[in-house]
Figure 1 (cartoon, rainbow, N blue to C red):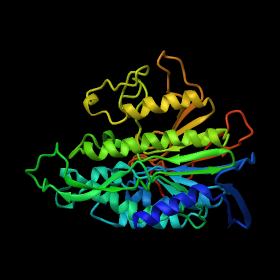
Figure 2: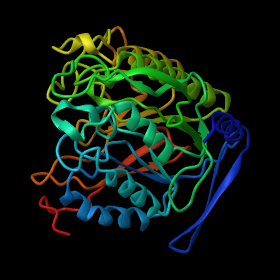
Figure 3: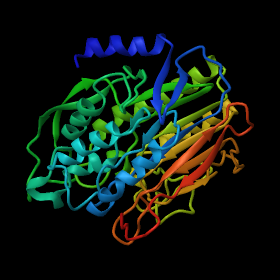
Figure 4: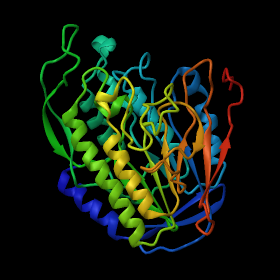
Length: 387
């Protein structure tokens, strides 16, 4: 989509309220979205991600989709990673993207997606050999495939606000840094294009504001093979602004809660070294062996300040480290718990030893004190995933 057209549609998404109507098991749904809406009616949403990582998981993924379709959901959201980081299928196999389009199209409720590092930043790994791809080219492809309009995916759709500024980077040209003798510490991209961050979305259901932010594992594209600090800097600045603007929207609309949906587990303290970066919980400075390539510190500091100032429930959804949990890991600079912040990590993992082809139902009651409550949906109970 041409930039001018996209910007125009983005403005439309922000200014025009409306209703979402559709039929799900003969139930008519009418979940309002947009601005100036103050309904306190309760509803539910579905969260999933890090799926599928294998043929075994792909074979039973229809069970998960059928289970979500059997329930009356306002929307579903996949928090990234359509494949495992290494192995088959790799990024040269476009079926990982086209299959995902099929998954989202089979969901009756509006379907939302945010990219994961396995989908693009890890596509340039030297271990992939001839099947390696320029990571930024892969992100451009995902933007064109999943985010070409300001509407959601899914059988029912609704209009979303799409970030237009600050801008992200797209692929311009290669610097030729490919092959077995290439310098994997340098990016493959030589020149960049100036593109809107169309994967960053925002919408309101009832009096709760939701937003996706493109935040990636693998140090947010600052480590692994071919790190790209230029690409990171633009996308990170855009993500921080989108987060701040989301809180501003929530305040302006007198919303009762905020939910962010991202991909990376940024790490919040020193307790989770097997799954995420470790960092000083007071300063949020990374303190492990990879601290020189911390791609999350600036975002986390800005997020914490906004969460504390907002003072109402904030849910932060991510995947990446493959461990379902709902907890409160965020501390303020003095070491006190930030009690209105909840981290939510969705199911998803490797095969065949673990299943985790399950999803999380979030019940949203704007009239309740905590707004969000969590109900894991265990669909595939056999760890070997026999359909």
